[in-house]
Length: 365
Image (cartoon, rainbow, N blue to C red; front, side, top):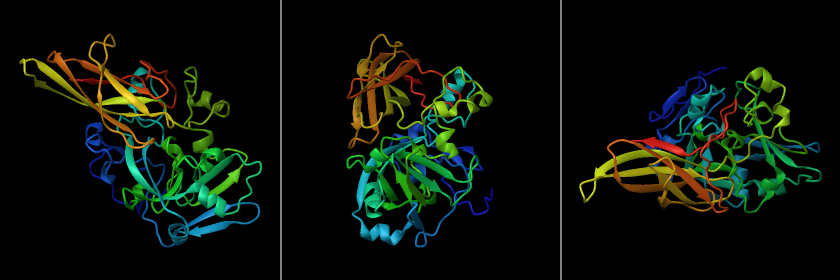
């Protein structure tokens, strides 16, 4: 692959790979901002990142009856603009993979806990574009998406799909977007055009989106059909995985999760030490996080944290807790609850790709 036109990337990230460029911020830096600035957004790529021509960019909706093409000007002027605040998690669903690798070796980049961001996305609703294109929805179950503008490590293009029901849901907030945080997206974010699928993992938020097609089936692309799946623990090698990819569903949303991003201690009014713990939580689909709890004794006693930020039904949750009268050093754990009374589990089963890891968050001081 040709990386001679690679754009410069943020210097605030911890680099996990150069070609393709993959990097993440420290979680302690992330939680300083309810809305993540561009230079603290993780980079997950399978090929080169280039600065593409906004004015010449075309989105094509393919069908057996002829293609429908939209220029950026068409999208920006013919449709009502929408905005949504939504958390974007780990395009590879591999946030916290480094922790799972400590249980047993996994296959993939060893991401820490910074492969997440929260942003305001702006663009047009996918459903509005599909309706305008006069596509025949009969017997169609999925919308397939593709980016052909750059080569990928494991396929000739990057592809993904989502159920048509999700795409057409008026409250699903699925966007064909060109803005992030009230500005035109940068190349690292997928400019000129990317898909925004609130509630779904980043693997479905196709960057540099240039092609769509309605289909009875999911995308056949490698990244939908043969990657980003939770395989059972007994599948321990790539050879074993090759025989069973089709038997397991592609990841849509990631599980309820929370992490400890920072810890610090101070002396309280009694001259004893108090622990200040901060972190973030993310939810499954639209099942909003309702509370986060922390414990310093391994789970015997939990105390509630204070939610410091939450916006709409798709954002992450930022939280802070103060634990009084702690020792000079120790371990703190956190867990999240959602509106359906689901609770983040204490443990998470290992899987070969190291995806969807969500046991109690852990921090030390």
